[in-house]
Image (cartoon, rainbow, N blue to C red):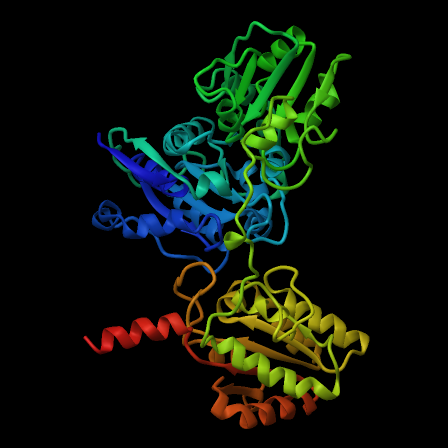
Length: 532
């Protein structure tokens, strides 16, 4: 098979396609978005009619994937690390239902928070659910792991978590393809109660899940992704997880690392290999991207008087991404990789695009709230979060998907007036409908601005699940149709828009105002097509 130059995300997608994939489900979120986008562009996937549309959120995506697995097909679920929080309920329970057709849950973590609210490490979810975790070192392993993961999933009838990080997800390398496997046929579970988690069944399934843990450790011991490299100098032993193995090797170039190295790419941890490196070496250095999962495990049950070094003792920084220079410094090598960054490429804060409809909405909102002061607007995850920055300084919170409505409800319950929520159309479809239902049921005195720019703009212009349905959804949830107002966020409508929002602030109950204007980039594309 020919070689392809692929992003890590694209390598996962191509590896899954070449391994008999029947469906891909997910919700767009950097740095995972390109996985499904690659599948959507793939001529092979289109010809085979592989399912590849976005889901409303990560929870529904994983549940839809479990449905495809129930029918015997191989399926891929994609999300970023905070998306796994949304999908945690089905993820944890899937450890007991298991899988019929292979299931791979691909999660892209974002150390250094390039586009995220936190730095959480998805390996902990795998450990919590006691499910296998795969962590590629490079793009080739990112391509190979879906095939390996599907086989492992179907062998033990459980889902497998595949964990990427930003730097691997968004960098390119040559990838050699394998032969293409056919898709599984339709095949319901042999056990008709496999996906039934009534307590009487769940208790038995949990025992079964506990019983296979020793087998999963054995799989890790023999995994092609967990490799022990001998070294002559036993003064140090190095455990390098996933992408950090590359950072380690970059410091030695063509030379062989003089220390024993254990490369980790599959979990649960290969205990025998870890016992070997701990027993042979005077001190252990753990290099891992994200949180100190492996280091913590070593300190907990394998620290036999040896010094364990890693993120927990500041050998490496506790926060942020690693890189070859940081690894070099932690190993005590000469650090000659730092370069001065020219002023021309100094960091600059992000900003709303010129012509963005959200800018006009925030100008209106700031005018409306002059008499109340700051601290009344609860925002959410999306481009519009940039409304926190000057020149708008219009919002006060950003916590998680859907939290704008929920926090506005709580603040209104506490007596804050006015309490205003700002949420995007896609985020409303993801997590905003349930708190809006709460607001209707309790009669919360809040105003909800659903910023409808007709697209999932922040993550690459994916289709919004609620496009053309927002008024209908709000009405169906019980919002009075008299208080579902649509405005056009343009400067020529400024006075009218101020009046509408002021009217809804005065109304004692749930109001929804929908500033509707396409994202400027959607508008440009539409205008270009119409002139051809």
